[in-house]
Image (cartoon, rainbow, N blue to C red; front, top):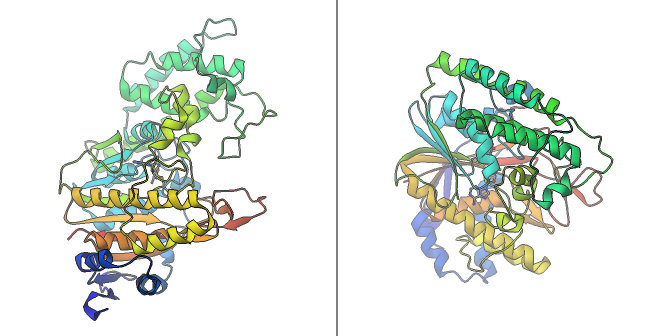
Length: 469
Ligand SMILES: C[S@@+](CC[C@H](N)C(=O)[O-])C[C@H]1O[C@@H](n2cnc3c(N)ncnc32)[C@H](O)[C@@H]1O
């Protein structure tokens, strides 16, 4: 291979741990197309180059935020609702401060529960969060929408007066879905149905969504879902709960968050900053070409969290889904495969898929679909970013069926192939309290500490920072 086609990397004087990659992009893509994927010598060559880049990256401990307390990570409205694999706000904030300025437009295509949206708002940046999961969208909207505290107090007091009329003889219209009966005991189901019917009478959308968000977060506690498990597991020994009391506690906690968010925005004069949250697909972001200054995001992982399963209680009660399997198909990284057509746009990915094929064909197919879907997301990122706009992608490597799935390396190659310039790769340590760090070695799924084939995973992750040329 000619020298000019190799990736050169050199220290970037502006950032401590940064590299500039040259000679990638279009040139590399031409070579990739002409390569025979079965030719392992060439694959090894490409793999070595990307490996070479990654092996030189040292952990930057300033990105661990290991001193951040629960209070720090749950400040303002961040602790409204549990959400798996959410960003630590300090990380999103630092990226936003470093790579954008006040008044800029920030997008998170995998917006989740709205961490980027909140941090963008407190930094005076307008934002859009997209997520395929309507439960995530409800949470993110509630968290990013500040409500005048006095008004909220009045509405809560009205709601409480209505709820106080409930007793065991109250006539309540019960939800019909049989999945709800699978998860809830009769008495709790009835009390919850009553609370929900009273919330639905709240006129103002933002306030109604605030209460729906509170309702959504108490469902796990009020069900027989095994409390300490993220996976849908029933616990028939779970103590019955008191939904109304739990709901009140939840709302009071959220009201405090709303109050501090309100004061913070007033103090900074950022009350008018827009944070839009939409339910949609990261491959079709509803914004114009060349309109976005910065993207900050953390994508889903292949067959890790089944977000559709995890949020089924809220999705069922709030009538977002009728059929769980249809709901699942929309998520990137889900374990059900749709069409076979995949374009992974990365030799590194092909290598991983071939290795997986030797172990398990289904996982190989799911991984191919995942990388192909992610490549489409990067194409979309390129479309919406302004020239010079940056995308910050937080991603860890993992393993499936004992095969290393080097997401960061694959994404780097895909981004280069699409013509992005990689301006920095940060390696950070993940404080264990923020993310599950145990996986089943065989299935690759998150597992408990008692799992026999457990493997500690995600001790570190990368932040890839790429610029649109
Ligand atoms: C790692 S989480 C993001 C968490 C987020 N950074 C936060 O702080 O809440 C990945 C998200 O991707 C979403 N997702 C999966 N497939 C998607 C798709 N096709 N389009 C948009 N979002 C999707 C999931 O619902 C999940 O919320």
